[in-house]
Image (tube, rainbow, N blue to C red):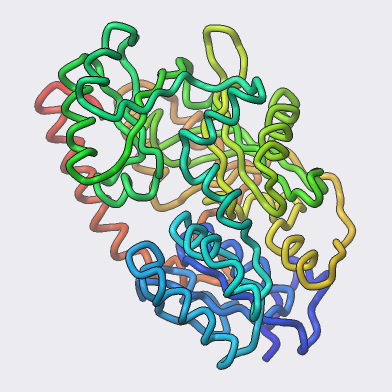
Length: 416
C-alpha cells in the first residue's frame, strides 16, 4: 500500500510499490521523524516499538506497528522478531533509532543481514560510540578536543582520583541509555567528594559503569550538533545546528535547536567519524569551552537523533538519503541546507521557558524566539496529529510532577 503524501511538503523521489519496507526501530521523537520522512515518500513503514505508548506507532505514515521485546533485556527475542518480519512483511531496511536497538542489531548483523538491509554498523564500530569512554579514548588518539574522562574501577581508585579533580565535575555513564533508565537523567553533576562517592556508588549498585568527567564550562547555548551521512569514509551530506535550551538545564536533552553554520566543528567531527570507521548517518555533539573558545567532543550517536525532523525541514532528508543509498546504491540530488530554522520540543520546552523567565534568566522575547521564527515541532504536525495526541496525557502527568518538584525545590531554596 502506498501512503498518501503531505502535499506541499514534497513528493520528490516517491517510491515504487515494489520498494522494500522500512522497519523503524523505536517510536519516540527520533522514530517519529524517520517514519514521517520515509512515509511521505511512499515507503511502506513499519514502526517496531517496545511499548504501545510510543508515539510513532500512531503516525498516519506508519502502515503497521509491531510490539517487540526490549532489545536490551531480551536481545534474542528482539532479533528473532526482526528476522520473522522478513517472512511476514518482506525483507526491508532496519533503521534503529535508539541505543538499545543499535546494540542489538549491531551484535547480530550477520544474521539480520541475510534478510534485511541494515542502517547500522557492525558491533566493532558501534561499541566505540555506545561506550563513551571508548569514544573519548579514540578522540585522544586523534587529537580531537574532548573533556578529560577517567573510569575508576574501584572505590579506592576513585579516592585516589579525588585530589586531582576540579569540582564541580560529572559522573557520566559509559552507556547512556542504561543510566537514563535507572535514574531518569543523562548524568549527574557533583560538587564535592561526598557527592562524587554517592553518585559513583549508586551507579555501581545498579551495575552501571560510569566515568568521572571534567565539566566543560559555558552556557548550554554553546552546544552544537553535527549531523552527517558518511559513505566510504566521506561526508556526502552535512548539517550543523546550535542548541538553544536543554532540560534539565545544562545536562539534559535539547528542547530548542536552531540550524546554523558552525564551521569550527566540521574538521573534528569528520575526523572522529573517520576514526570510528562509521558509514551511514551519525550525530556528533560538541560544546564550546568558555575557557579557550574551542569546541569539545561530547558524544557520538550512530543513529537518528531526537531533533531529526529539523534536518528534513532544512532540506537534508537524512532518513530518506540513508534509505535510498542502501536500496539503490545512489543518492537523490542534494541542495544547500536552510539556516535559521528552529526545532522545538513542544512538550518540554514551554515549562523550561517558564521556569527560566520566572527566575529572570531569560526575557519573554528570548523564550518565544523559536516559536515566532521558522520552526518545526518534535511531535506535533497538522498533517499527522495522532502521535502528538497519543503522547499528551503521559507528558501532562510528567509536567505536573515537574511543576510540583520545582515548587518543592524553591521552597527548600534550591534551583533545578
